[in-house]
Amino acid sequence: MNSVSENLQAPPTTRDQLEERMRFEELLSELSVRLINLGSEEADTALEEGLRLVGKFARADEVRLLSVQERESAHRVAYGWVAKGTPGDLACSSQGFFDRFPLAVELLRAGKPMMYESLDQIPSRAQAERTYLASEGLLAAIAYPVMVDARLLAVLFIHRFQETRWPNTLTGRLPHIASIFGNALARKQAQEDLHRQLEFEELLADISAKFVNPAPQEIDSEIDQTLARLGRFFEADRVFVARFDNDRTGKAEGFTFGWAAPGISGQDPMLEGAAFDHRFPWMTARMRRRDIFHVPVDPLPPEAAAERAYVRQVGIRSSILVPLAVGGYVTGTVVLDSFNEKRRWTAQLAQRLQLVGEIIASALERKRDFQALCKRDRALKHALDEIGVLKDRLEAENLLLREEIELHQSHE
Image (cartoon, rainbow, N blue to C red; front, side, top):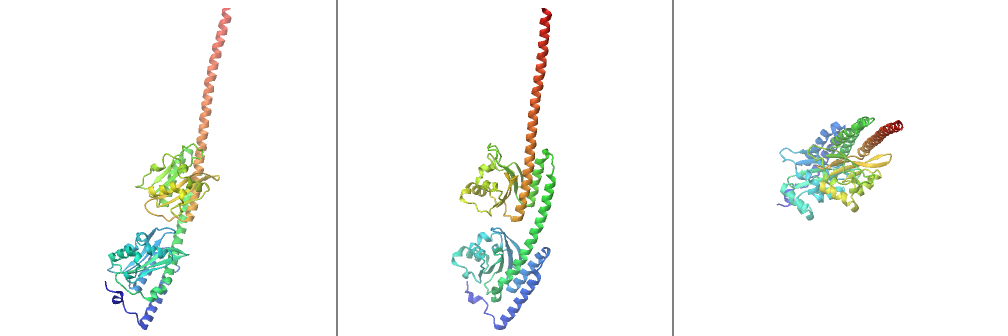
């Protein structure tokens, strides 16, 4: 491989610098006009066009925005622009990025860019990354963190398939470009979250209406339908209700009601044969305090060995556990699991999901009261039947006794 100095362009002249700076200022102005105060329906087109403008200015082969989920390693290519004649997706901008490039991720999470003009500039401790990039022919790249409120919201990638000298105007003003993209993404995400919240409020109102005064024999069916609607809304793979062994009988099942997406088993042998609170005591203790538990966002300490082993063995990528509470007393939990990919479930939706848990808990309590009343009615009916039998027996015996007395008196 030739040295960088043999392949890179010579430093620009003063006039070239001025023209380059003028082009960059025009780029910033156009990005600002296109991406500031956008509606969510306009954002996708504007963001794609913004990446195209950056790519043209940087003379890049590919420019992409990789969105990052809050506090997790989940990510996806949100927007992209590829120059004409450039090969398809590069793995460094795909969903495998966080696993394949640990050095770059370490820098990005710290708010620092990863930038190189040739593979020789990649640190030796990232030899595996350099080898992979060489095999892909990706000889120059910029990975810039898009930070919003000190949180990594996305990564801006600028790629070239040949060694290059990145314009100083570009590298020095990348924070401005990242800020414009970051603000546009944050506004779009906030609008989407608000729309999602409104959709859930409509779902919650409909669920509440169905549980206002259901017939006791219809409660099980209504709960199953509610779990299915929650699973589809939250894009979960499995939703189930687990009831705690609050009577300490040891007879509570792992899960009582459940729904599973197509292709996902509705059975879980690891949850059968023991009460949920017996199997997962650390997690249960938190939910008895009415805490909402998130997996894998919430850390699992050493004392949560059973919970950690279960999550790892079953392959849960994301999960929410919401306590079932009636009158401040927790009787179980509603669990939403995702196995195929990590999900972004906002704190606002999780909090409102707790209301669904309370609705289901109240319905189960009404069903339990009805069953107890039916049991008492059956016991009372049985007692009355026994009293009737005894009454009939006594009357028969009384009649027989009278006949014997009359017979005896007649004989005398």
